[in-house]
Amino acid sequence: MSSYNAPFEIHVHGDVPLRPDVTYEQLQEALKPLWKYAGAKSLASAAESAYEEEPGIKFDATEHLLRMCWTVPGEEDFRQSLDEMCMSLNELAEQGAAIEVTFYDAEFDEEEASPDAESRDDFVMLFVGPNPAAIMQVQRDLLVEDVVNLMERHFDGAELGGVVAEIDKLFAQRFDALVNSLEIGRPPRGSGGSGPGHGGGRRPRHLH
Image (cartoon, rainbow, N blue to C red; front, side, top):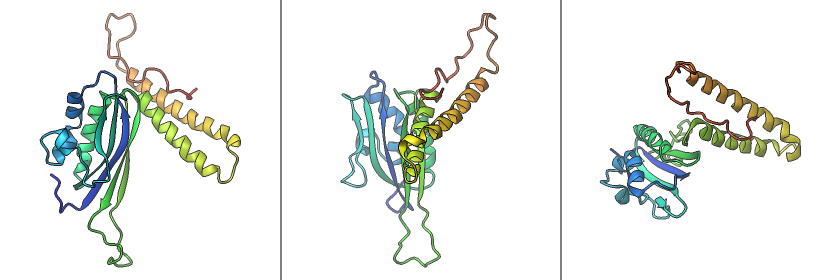
């Protein structure tokens, strides 16, 4: 359980596109690990951030979007709540999305700390989506953006097509390996068994 004497201020940030049929009640259940950690009895009572200038947790029913810009005091055990939340959001997500989580060391004072002292700040990037292909698509897009931004300091953007193609090749290999691993154990075609469908579906776009 978090408290205001907790060693971290934890900021959760991201927008998750939701299926059009998702209700507030379903979202409240999916986010239960977060609002319970905050010591609340419902999503509504925990939706406000620890900082007034942050919008907190919002359900945009018109855009079918979960918006999160929310800070809560907590400890390392908050990571377990995040894992549970992501598993639940996978069931509600329409598309892949990234969620940024920053752990700020609330006990570290840069001005008073000794020169050798280091803060325990940490940053985690989480991904949710309806299937592995959607999650890999978000991972791919973020990596391409980061690599292109870095390399454009030295090369023109038009020169980087080959680099992007190599990134796509890596993700295609990872996706195919995942699909192949999920195929193991499925009944042979024509055996009469339906078997579980693999979670991959189509390859992510751009991964040819």
